[in-house]
Image (cartoon, rainbow, N blue to C red; front, side, top):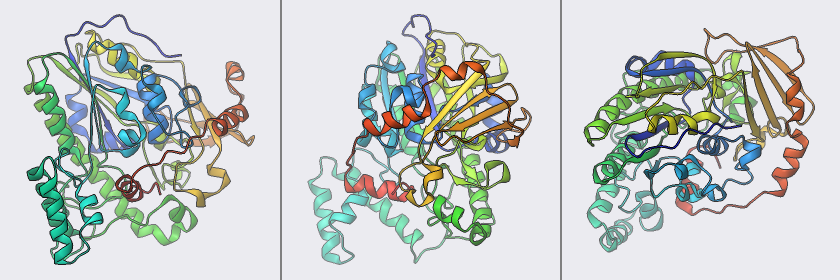
Length: 467
């Protein structure tokens, strides 16, 4: 059951920043600046699910996936309109997202007063999408580029559209030659920042913002903002799908090393960028502005504690569920808060911060679920398409699925994202009162919805490995 804060006076701005795909052990290792700057760190935060769509729905509603009904088979957020924390706040609400699954193509925009979709090469969101311009008009010939430029001239924002197209083309010269070096732009963090600051500066009333940045999400490649690594110039993780890596892990040993290296570099980049973002947020307004930093889920990186898995498909490992949760410029500064907390209490946290207090979020038991595999991973087979549920009980974690398999895992509070299978023990008696997983699967099939998106979104989803 989710908690509800007292009524919220409209005074403090609250910004929730989702560092998509950042696991807790990587955050601890490569985001020291944010941890040092935080007034509050909830060290034992667990996501309510293991990939973007159900996790984002849980983050804004405080409900488990089987309760809110948003999953791979019904990915629309539109049924949640009027049912989220942003509806309970007296603030002007804004969403800014680089994740198409948490974007307007799937109705995430309906949860906010204003919404901005961000993509990697669309540096000015009000300008034309350069990927669409090239796909629809530029066929590599001078005549094709002339058609693209004509489309730019017809756009409502021709200068910004031209800037988007120029940035896309410049980066393409680096990505595919003849120029060498890291790519020119990040995966949208700077664009998310600019859109957020614009909304804060333009508003005469308190603002509540939800942001998503995708800079740690696959596919990974070096960008100019990353610190130096030993990864060869031009290397990209494209082709490293969960299906490919799990089918033949020996073929990806060197690629896994490179991926882990760039993943660490991405978290380090986000650490530096977020700290600057927090400072610029406060400078943009006379109101106190609190920044909540978390992740919708983590990432399996092929380690033994990750069950040898890669990506975030159909599992509930600690690598996926143990995520950062820190608060900067909080009304109070309790420091590090130990104990297990849940994303199901994120709405309560946001409301409490807006009301000027820092709540105790610790729970004796925490639940999480995943209702089948993520899109684009049919090759992984039935084992990854199960309905799974876990419950945390002290230093033990109980996992079971709708195929009748179960296990107990040991955890270590001093080793984030670590787990190991131990002798199975009975899970808490009260879990018998939860809806049966077989019933959840049947409901999932009944509620399935076919969400069609345009070719630009399809292209982005393919790039992210979801197609």
